[in-house]
Image 1 (cartoon, rainbow, N blue to C red):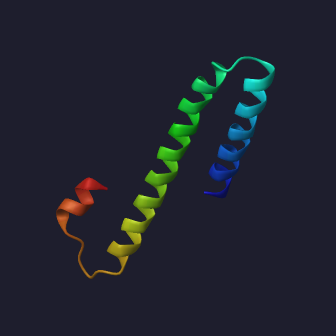
Image 2: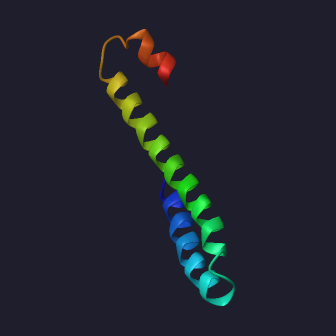
Length: 68
């Protein structure tokens, strides 16, 4: 997760530089990448949180396993 967060920060900083040096429209393209990184981060967090909750239960419901 730390690598993902670090990449997100670097990408965000690069978008500032790119909008100043290149063109403001480049920030729209970078925003798509930032959004994807955020979605991936939320997915990781959701997955591991649900795995932790299931590990604490004696038997995980079948629908949870299918969803994961």
